[in-house]
Image (cartoon, rainbow, N blue to C red; front, top):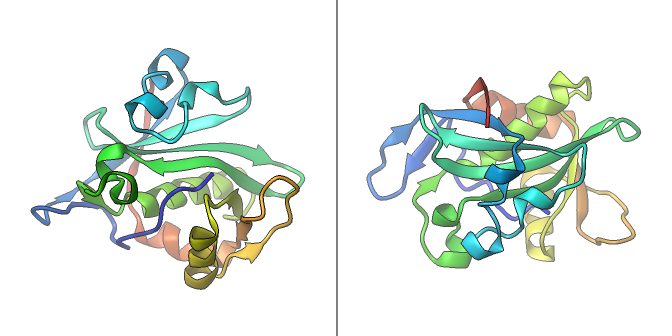
Amino acid sequence: MITFRVDDIIPCIKEVATGDIYDTEVVRIRRKSILSKYNKNTGWYVNWSKFPEGTEVYALVLKGTNDIQGMVAIRYDDEAKAVHVLWGCVAPQNNIWQYGTKKFSGVGGHLLAIASDLSVKHGYEGYLFGEAMDKELYDYYCDEFGAAYLPAINNPYRFMLSDEATAHIREVYTYEWTDEII
């Protein structure tokens, strides 16, 4: 479920209160003990440790820290030749829709860039698909990024982003891939 909008199209993330810019890194999280700390009780939409085998979880962190600003869970879909974004959401401190405040902007765009980058690395040319959390968000992705409806039995808001739609996202957002796996 994709739960965010792309609020600022900027290479790094920006602290809303000060306008300060911060570099970011991407960390893959494999340990269920770490993921279990991120759940509905701690302000996230989902329990991040409950994804099935074969799901990869990546966190966007402030460079040099483990300060998570957002996470994305993906699976590779060889049949569709695309990355399936199972979940993507910003950290509670960045979730203005649920909590009324936002510490950093630019996080959502980074999460899409990470999924798209993984799609390219896996040979899918940047194609990705996912399910928007509601019609308003689905319409947003269609209007802003040219998302195409992708039929799904269990979700009327499934969409696909093409290689062209994600190319711009990959070009704008910058982050470093770390070898660190927590």
